[in-house]
Length: 125
Image (cartoon, rainbow, N blue to C red):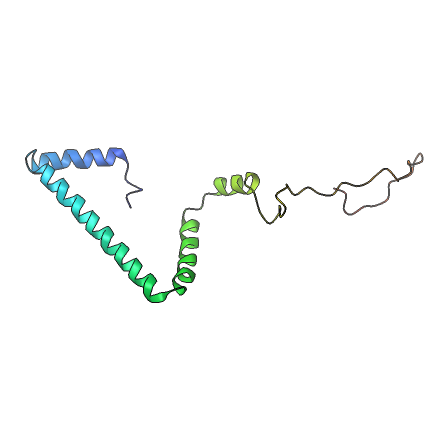
């Protein structure tokens, strides 16, 4: 909820509250803010649970695109490239082993004569 607020901003708010409300009313105001935030979270959780109960399994189908949008909003190209290069991908590794291109068997090939070119192999890279 407060992901974008850093410690410096919180410190500025506390100091401003200290000057505006005074030291005797500041703890009371902080308790009120904490209770209000807790109440709003309870309302949001209750609404989510009620929606989940009423929609049943369709709720998950609705939630999945929203999660995808949230991931897209937090998209970081550097992290995506790093994840793509270094994380395990179950599609490439169905048996749990890294996907390795097949090795060409060169044991049955004859040596090339002088000036002869090797045959074209589209799989060789």
